[in-house]
Image (tube, rainbow, N blue to C red; front, side):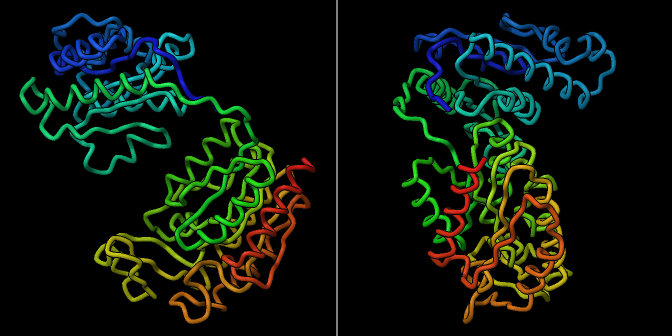
Length: 410
Protein backbone atom coordinates (compact mmCIF):
# COMPACT_ATOMS: atom_id res chain seq x y z
CA UNK A 1 0.00 0.00 0.00
CA UNK A 2 1.40 3.37 -0.98
CA UNK A 3 0.86 6.40 1.24
CA UNK A 4 0.40 10.03 0.26
CA UNK A 5 -2.72 11.17 -1.55
CA UNK A 6 -1.64 14.65 -2.69
CA UNK A 7 -3.40 17.93 -2.06
CA UNK A 8 -6.74 17.80 -3.82
CA UNK A 9 -10.05 18.93 -2.35
CA UNK A 10 -11.27 18.10 1.15
CA UNK A 11 -14.78 16.70 1.37
CA UNK A 12 -16.91 18.17 4.17
CA UNK A 13 -19.84 15.92 5.09
CA UNK A 14 -22.59 17.08 7.42
CA UNK A 15 -26.09 18.20 8.25
CA UNK A 16 -26.04 21.82 7.22
CA UNK A 17 -29.59 22.48 8.41
CA UNK A 18 -28.35 22.22 12.02
CA UNK A 19 -24.56 22.68 11.69
CA UNK A 20 -24.22 25.18 8.83
CA UNK A 21 -22.47 27.88 10.85
CA UNK A 22 -19.89 25.43 12.16
CA UNK A 23 -19.21 23.97 8.71
CA UNK A 24 -18.76 27.46 7.31
CA UNK A 25 -16.17 28.15 10.03
CA UNK A 26 -14.25 24.97 9.20
CA UNK A 27 -14.52 25.59 5.46
CA UNK A 28 -12.94 29.04 5.88
CA UNK A 29 -10.07 27.66 7.99
CA UNK A 30 -9.30 24.97 5.44
CA UNK A 31 -9.40 27.36 2.50
CA UNK A 32 -7.20 29.84 4.38
CA UNK A 33 -4.77 26.93 4.74
CA UNK A 34 -4.55 26.54 0.99
CA UNK A 35 -6.94 23.68 0.22
CA UNK A 36 -10.24 23.67 -1.65
CA UNK A 37 -13.38 22.04 -0.29
CA UNK A 38 -16.43 20.15 -1.50
CA UNK A 39 -19.36 20.64 0.89
CA UNK A 40 -21.93 17.81 0.98
CA UNK A 41 -25.24 18.52 2.72
CA UNK A 42 -26.84 15.54 4.45
CA UNK A 43 -29.53 17.49 6.31
CA UNK A 44 -33.20 16.73 5.81
CA UNK A 45 -35.21 19.67 7.06
CA UNK A 46 -34.69 23.38 6.77
CA UNK A 47 -32.76 25.53 4.37
CA UNK A 48 -29.01 25.41 4.97
CA UNK A 49 -27.39 28.75 5.86
CA UNK A 50 -24.55 28.07 3.41
CA UNK A 51 -24.73 26.79 -0.16
CA UNK A 52 -23.49 23.21 -0.51
CA UNK A 53 -21.70 21.84 -3.53
CA UNK A 54 -23.71 18.62 -3.17
CA UNK A 55 -27.30 19.13 -2.05
CA UNK A 56 -29.20 16.90 0.33
CA UNK A 57 -31.52 16.00 -2.56
CA UNK A 58 -28.53 14.62 -4.46
CA UNK A 59 -27.35 12.64 -1.44
CA UNK A 60 -30.82 11.20 -0.86
CA UNK A 61 -31.13 10.22 -4.52
CA UNK A 62 -27.77 8.45 -4.35
CA UNK A 63 -29.09 6.64 -1.26
CA UNK A 64 -32.12 5.40 -3.18
CA UNK A 65 -34.88 7.79 -2.08
CA UNK A 66 -36.30 11.18 -3.09
CA UNK A 67 -35.71 13.88 -0.48
CA UNK A 68 -39.37 14.90 -0.64
CA UNK A 69 -40.41 11.37 0.33
CA UNK A 70 -38.08 11.40 3.32
CA UNK A 71 -39.50 14.72 4.47
CA UNK A 72 -43.08 13.49 4.10
CA UNK A 73 -42.39 10.19 5.87
CA UNK A 74 -40.88 12.07 8.83
CA UNK A 75 -38.99 8.90 9.89
CA UNK A 76 -35.67 10.03 11.36
CA UNK A 77 -34.16 6.55 11.42
CA UNK A 78 -34.94 5.83 7.78
CA UNK A 79 -33.72 9.27 6.73
CA UNK A 80 -30.38 8.72 8.44
CA UNK A 81 -30.01 5.32 6.76
CA UNK A 82 -30.65 6.81 3.32
CA UNK A 83 -28.26 9.72 3.84
CA UNK A 84 -25.59 7.35 5.20
CA UNK A 85 -25.81 5.24 2.08
CA UNK A 86 -25.82 8.24 -0.25
CA UNK A 87 -22.92 9.96 1.49
CA UNK A 88 -20.81 6.79 1.42
CA UNK A 89 -21.45 6.19 -2.28
CA UNK A 90 -20.65 9.77 -3.21
CA UNK A 91 -17.50 9.90 -1.07
CA UNK A 92 -16.17 6.77 -2.77
CA UNK A 93 -17.01 8.18 -6.23
CA UNK A 94 -15.15 11.41 -5.44
CA UNK A 95 -12.13 9.47 -4.24
CA UNK A 96 -12.04 7.06 -7.16
CA UNK A 97 -12.29 9.94 -9.63
CA UNK A 98 -9.34 11.66 -7.92
CA UNK A 99 -11.32 14.68 -6.71
CA UNK A 100 -10.66 14.45 -2.97
CA UNK A 101 -7.70 13.72 -0.73
CA UNK A 102 -9.45 13.68 2.65
CA UNK A 103 -12.77 13.88 4.50
CA UNK A 104 -13.84 15.92 7.52
CA UNK A 105 -17.17 15.84 9.31
CA UNK A 106 -18.69 17.10 12.54
CA UNK A 107 -21.88 16.35 14.38
CA UNK A 108 -23.85 14.73 17.15
CA UNK A 109 -25.22 11.20 16.94
CA UNK A 110 -26.83 11.57 13.50
CA UNK A 111 -24.00 13.61 12.00
CA UNK A 112 -21.39 11.22 13.39
CA UNK A 113 -23.23 8.22 12.02
CA UNK A 114 -23.53 9.72 8.54
CA UNK A 115 -20.04 11.23 8.44
CA UNK A 116 -18.20 8.11 9.58
CA UNK A 117 -20.18 5.94 7.17
CA UNK A 118 -18.80 8.07 4.35
CA UNK A 119 -15.31 7.70 5.81
CA UNK A 120 -15.60 3.93 6.17
CA UNK A 121 -16.28 3.71 2.43
CA UNK A 122 -12.75 4.98 1.72
CA UNK A 123 -9.49 3.00 1.78
CA UNK A 124 -7.14 2.91 4.74
CA UNK A 125 -4.67 5.79 4.51
CA UNK A 126 -7.06 8.42 3.16
CA UNK A 127 -7.18 11.18 5.84
CA UNK A 128 -10.41 11.08 7.84
CA UNK A 129 -11.31 13.43 10.74
CA UNK A 130 -14.60 13.30 12.68
CA UNK A 131 -15.40 15.98 15.29
CA UNK A 132 -18.09 14.43 17.47
CA UNK A 133 -19.94 14.83 20.73
CA UNK A 134 -19.63 11.03 21.05
CA UNK A 135 -15.85 10.75 20.70
CA UNK A 136 -15.19 10.15 24.40
CA UNK A 137 -17.43 7.07 24.50
CA UNK A 138 -17.48 3.77 22.63
CA UNK A 139 -16.31 4.75 19.14
CA UNK A 140 -16.10 1.23 17.70
CA UNK A 141 -19.38 1.51 15.72
CA UNK A 142 -18.11 4.70 14.08
CA UNK A 143 -14.46 3.81 13.48
CA UNK A 144 -14.94 0.17 12.50
CA UNK A 145 -11.79 -1.15 10.84
CA UNK A 146 -10.75 2.15 9.23
CA UNK A 147 -8.25 4.81 10.32
CA UNK A 148 -10.76 7.45 11.39
CA UNK A 149 -9.50 10.17 13.73
CA UNK A 150 -12.19 11.02 16.29
CA UNK A 151 -11.98 14.46 17.94
CA UNK A 152 -14.09 15.05 21.04
CA UNK A 153 -16.00 18.31 20.65
CA UNK A 154 -16.10 18.77 24.49
CA UNK A 155 -19.01 21.22 24.15
CA UNK A 156 -22.01 20.59 21.95
CA UNK A 157 -21.60 21.61 18.33
CA UNK A 158 -23.91 24.56 18.57
CA UNK A 159 -22.48 27.88 17.52
CA UNK A 160 -19.00 29.39 17.42
CA UNK A 161 -17.64 30.31 20.84
CA UNK A 162 -14.19 30.47 22.48
CA UNK A 163 -14.19 26.69 23.08
CA UNK A 164 -15.76 25.42 19.86
CA UNK A 165 -13.74 27.77 17.66
CA UNK A 166 -10.45 26.32 18.93
CA UNK A 167 -11.59 22.70 18.66
CA UNK A 168 -13.04 23.14 15.17
CA UNK A 169 -9.97 25.06 14.02
CA UNK A 170 -7.74 22.28 15.35
CA UNK A 171 -9.72 19.76 13.31
CA UNK A 172 -9.30 21.89 10.18
CA UNK A 173 -5.56 22.19 10.83
CA UNK A 174 -5.34 18.44 11.40
CA UNK A 175 -6.91 17.50 8.07
CA UNK A 176 -4.75 20.10 6.32
CA UNK A 177 -1.63 18.59 7.82
CA UNK A 178 -2.72 15.10 6.83
CA UNK A 179 -3.44 15.91 3.18
CA UNK A 180 -0.37 18.12 2.78
CA UNK A 181 2.05 15.72 4.42
CA UNK A 182 4.18 13.48 2.24
CA UNK A 183 4.79 9.91 3.31
CA UNK A 184 8.36 8.79 2.58
CA UNK A 185 8.36 6.39 -0.32
CA UNK A 186 9.30 2.84 0.57
CA UNK A 187 11.87 1.83 -1.99
CA UNK A 188 11.15 -1.87 -1.87
CA UNK A 189 7.63 -3.15 -1.39
CA UNK A 190 7.76 -6.53 0.30
CA UNK A 191 5.01 -9.16 0.49
CA UNK A 192 2.77 -8.54 3.48
CA UNK A 193 2.06 -11.13 6.16
CA UNK A 194 -0.73 -10.61 8.70
CA UNK A 195 -0.23 -11.91 12.24
CA UNK A 196 -2.41 -11.86 15.37
CA UNK A 197 -1.08 -11.16 18.85
CA UNK A 198 -2.23 -10.76 22.45
CA UNK A 199 -0.18 -9.65 25.43
CA UNK A 200 0.00 -13.29 26.49
CA UNK A 201 1.28 -14.49 23.09
CA UNK A 202 3.68 -11.59 22.48
CA UNK A 203 6.96 -13.56 22.81
CA UNK A 204 5.78 -16.03 20.18
CA UNK A 205 4.64 -13.44 17.64
CA UNK A 206 7.68 -11.23 18.20
CA UNK A 207 10.07 -14.10 17.47
CA UNK A 208 8.08 -15.19 14.42
CA UNK A 209 7.88 -11.63 13.11
CA UNK A 210 11.64 -11.15 13.43
CA UNK A 211 12.27 -14.34 11.47
CA UNK A 212 9.79 -13.43 8.73
CA UNK A 213 11.26 -9.95 8.36
CA UNK A 214 14.70 -11.49 8.00
CA UNK A 215 13.26 -13.61 5.18
CA UNK A 216 12.15 -10.53 3.25
CA UNK A 217 8.56 -10.06 4.38
CA UNK A 218 6.79 -7.17 6.07
CA UNK A 219 4.60 -8.28 8.97
CA UNK A 220 1.43 -6.45 10.03
CA UNK A 221 0.58 -7.42 13.63
CA UNK A 222 -3.03 -7.11 14.76
CA UNK A 223 -4.07 -7.01 18.41
CA UNK A 224 -6.70 -9.73 18.82
CA UNK A 225 -9.26 -7.56 20.60
CA UNK A 226 -12.18 -8.04 18.23
CA UNK A 227 -11.65 -5.02 16.05
CA UNK A 228 -8.08 -6.20 15.45
CA UNK A 229 -9.25 -9.47 13.95
CA UNK A 230 -11.86 -7.67 11.88
CA UNK A 231 -9.26 -5.21 10.59
CA UNK A 232 -6.95 -8.05 9.58
CA UNK A 233 -9.72 -9.90 7.77
CA UNK A 234 -10.77 -6.74 5.92
CA UNK A 235 -7.22 -6.22 4.63
CA UNK A 236 -7.06 -9.86 3.54
CA UNK A 237 -10.34 -9.42 1.67
CA UNK A 238 -9.00 -6.25 0.04
CA UNK A 239 -6.07 -8.22 -1.39
CA UNK A 240 -3.19 -6.64 0.56
CA UNK A 241 -2.03 -9.80 2.34
CA UNK A 242 0.08 -12.64 0.91
CA UNK A 243 0.08 -14.97 3.92
CA UNK A 244 -1.42 -15.23 7.41
CA UNK A 245 0.20 -16.20 10.72
CA UNK A 246 -2.93 -16.46 12.85
CA UNK A 247 -1.22 -17.29 16.14
CA UNK A 248 -3.86 -15.78 18.43
CA UNK A 249 -7.41 -16.99 17.74
CA UNK A 250 -8.73 -15.96 21.17
CA UNK A 251 -11.45 -13.75 19.70
CA UNK A 252 -13.44 -16.92 19.12
CA UNK A 253 -13.62 -17.49 22.91
CA UNK A 254 -15.43 -14.18 23.28
CA UNK A 255 -17.70 -14.89 20.32
CA UNK A 256 -18.64 -18.29 21.76
CA UNK A 257 -19.09 -17.34 25.42
CA UNK A 258 -20.04 -13.65 25.22
CA UNK A 259 -16.87 -11.75 26.07
CA UNK A 260 -15.97 -8.24 24.99
CA UNK A 261 -13.38 -9.05 22.31
CA UNK A 262 -15.46 -10.92 19.75
CA UNK A 263 -14.52 -10.40 16.10
CA UNK A 264 -17.82 -11.89 14.90
CA UNK A 265 -18.84 -15.26 13.46
CA UNK A 266 -16.90 -14.78 10.21
CA UNK A 267 -13.51 -14.59 11.90
CA UNK A 268 -11.00 -17.03 10.35
CA UNK A 269 -12.72 -17.10 6.96
CA UNK A 270 -10.94 -14.41 4.94
CA UNK A 271 -7.70 -16.29 4.25
CA UNK A 272 -9.58 -19.28 2.87
CA UNK A 273 -11.76 -17.06 0.70
CA UNK A 274 -8.71 -15.15 -0.56
CA UNK A 275 -6.94 -18.43 -1.36
CA UNK A 276 -3.74 -17.51 0.46
CA UNK A 277 -1.57 -19.71 2.74
CA UNK A 278 -2.25 -19.61 6.45
CA UNK A 279 -0.65 -21.00 9.57
CA UNK A 280 -3.10 -21.01 12.48
CA UNK A 281 -2.64 -21.78 16.17
CA UNK A 282 -4.59 -21.80 19.41
CA UNK A 283 -3.16 -18.69 21.06
CA UNK A 284 -5.07 -17.55 24.17
CA UNK A 285 -7.97 -19.94 23.64
CA UNK A 286 -7.77 -20.44 27.40
CA UNK A 287 -9.50 -17.13 28.13
CA UNK A 288 -12.67 -15.09 27.71
CA UNK A 289 -12.32 -11.34 28.23
CA UNK A 290 -14.57 -9.08 30.26
CA UNK A 291 -14.17 -5.57 31.64
CA UNK A 292 -13.66 -4.86 35.33
CA UNK A 293 -14.63 -7.64 37.74
CA UNK A 294 -18.08 -6.10 38.26
CA UNK A 295 -18.89 -6.47 34.54
CA UNK A 296 -18.65 -10.28 34.53
CA UNK A 297 -22.18 -11.64 33.95
CA UNK A 298 -23.78 -13.03 37.10
CA UNK A 299 -23.98 -16.66 35.89
CA UNK A 300 -20.21 -16.64 35.27
CA UNK A 301 -19.04 -15.05 38.52
CA UNK A 302 -18.40 -18.49 40.07
CA UNK A 303 -16.14 -19.55 37.18
CA UNK A 304 -12.33 -19.47 37.30
CA UNK A 305 -11.60 -15.72 36.99
CA UNK A 306 -8.30 -13.85 36.88
CA UNK A 307 -7.86 -10.09 37.27
CA UNK A 308 -5.54 -9.19 34.39
CA UNK A 309 -5.69 -5.50 35.32
CA UNK A 310 -8.21 -3.01 36.71
CA UNK A 311 -10.16 -2.95 33.46
CA UNK A 312 -9.81 -6.52 32.17
CA UNK A 313 -11.00 -9.72 33.86
CA UNK A 314 -10.19 -13.07 32.27
CA UNK A 315 -12.26 -16.25 32.60
CA UNK A 316 -10.70 -19.67 31.99
CA UNK A 317 -12.42 -21.64 29.22
CA UNK A 318 -13.66 -25.02 30.43
CA UNK A 319 -13.44 -28.44 28.82
CA UNK A 320 -16.77 -28.25 27.00
CA UNK A 321 -16.00 -24.80 25.60
CA UNK A 322 -12.62 -26.02 24.37
CA UNK A 323 -14.28 -28.89 22.54
CA UNK A 324 -16.52 -26.39 20.79
CA UNK A 325 -13.61 -24.05 20.03
CA UNK A 326 -11.65 -26.90 18.49
CA UNK A 327 -14.59 -27.78 16.26
CA UNK A 328 -15.07 -24.14 15.21
CA UNK A 329 -11.39 -23.59 14.35
CA UNK A 330 -11.26 -26.81 12.39
CA UNK A 331 -14.37 -26.03 10.39
CA UNK A 332 -13.07 -22.57 9.50
CA UNK A 333 -9.64 -23.81 8.43
CA UNK A 334 -11.20 -26.74 6.55
CA UNK A 335 -12.46 -24.19 4.03
CA UNK A 336 -8.89 -23.48 2.88
CA UNK A 337 -7.99 -24.32 -0.69
CA UNK A 338 -4.48 -22.87 -0.45
CA UNK A 339 -2.08 -24.86 1.77
CA UNK A 340 -2.65 -24.40 5.50
CA UNK A 341 -1.31 -25.70 8.80
CA UNK A 342 -2.80 -25.80 12.29
CA UNK A 343 -0.15 -25.81 15.05
CA UNK A 344 -0.93 -27.23 18.49
CA UNK A 345 1.33 -26.14 21.41
CA UNK A 346 0.90 -29.14 23.70
CA UNK A 347 2.47 -27.42 26.73
CA UNK A 348 0.11 -24.42 26.87
CA UNK A 349 -1.67 -21.84 24.74
CA UNK A 350 -0.89 -18.58 26.57
CA UNK A 351 1.49 -16.93 29.01
CA UNK A 352 -0.73 -17.93 31.94
CA UNK A 353 -1.47 -21.45 30.70
CA UNK A 354 1.61 -23.23 31.98
CA UNK A 355 2.59 -24.95 35.20
CA UNK A 356 2.49 -22.54 38.13
CA UNK A 357 0.33 -20.00 36.27
CA UNK A 358 -3.36 -19.25 37.02
CA UNK A 359 -4.87 -20.77 33.86
CA UNK A 360 -2.74 -23.93 33.69
CA UNK A 361 -5.19 -26.52 32.39
CA UNK A 362 -3.84 -29.68 30.75
CA UNK A 363 -7.32 -31.26 30.72
CA UNK A 364 -8.92 -28.25 29.03
CA UNK A 365 -6.09 -28.01 26.50
CA UNK A 366 -6.32 -31.72 25.73
CA UNK A 367 -10.03 -31.31 24.97
CA UNK A 368 -9.16 -28.49 22.57
CA UNK A 369 -6.41 -30.40 20.78
CA UNK A 370 -8.40 -33.65 20.53
CA UNK A 371 -11.35 -31.76 19.08
CA UNK A 372 -9.14 -30.15 16.44
CA UNK A 373 -7.61 -33.48 15.44
CA UNK A 374 -11.09 -34.98 15.21
CA UNK A 375 -12.61 -32.24 13.09
CA UNK A 376 -9.84 -31.27 10.65
CA UNK A 377 -10.90 -33.14 7.51
CA UNK A 378 -9.42 -31.09 4.66
CA UNK A 379 -6.43 -32.51 2.81
CA UNK A 380 -5.16 -28.94 2.41
CA UNK A 381 -4.71 -28.61 6.19
CA UNK A 382 -1.81 -30.17 8.08
CA UNK A 383 -2.19 -30.55 11.86
CA UNK A 384 1.20 -30.21 13.58
CA UNK A 385 1.58 -31.11 17.27
CA UNK A 386 4.65 -29.86 19.12
CA UNK A 387 5.74 -30.63 22.67
CA UNK A 388 6.32 -26.95 23.41
CA UNK A 389 4.59 -23.96 24.93
CA UNK A 390 3.19 -21.41 22.51
CA UNK A 391 5.75 -18.82 23.66
CA UNK A 392 8.74 -21.10 23.22
CA UNK A 393 11.12 -19.82 20.55
CA UNK A 394 11.19 -23.19 18.81
CA UNK A 395 7.42 -23.16 18.43
CA UNK A 396 7.40 -19.62 17.03
CA UNK A 397 10.15 -20.40 14.54
CA UNK A 398 8.46 -23.61 13.44
CA UNK A 399 5.28 -21.72 12.58
CA UNK A 400 7.13 -18.94 10.77
CA UNK A 401 9.22 -21.41 8.79
CA UNK A 402 6.13 -23.38 7.85
CA UNK A 403 4.40 -20.27 6.57
CA UNK A 404 7.37 -19.36 4.40
CA UNK A 405 7.35 -22.89 3.01
CA UNK A 406 3.61 -22.73 2.24
CA UNK A 407 3.94 -19.32 0.60
CA UNK A 408 6.78 -20.55 -1.61
CA UNK A 409 4.68 -23.61 -2.52
CA UNK A 410 1.68 -21.46 -3.32
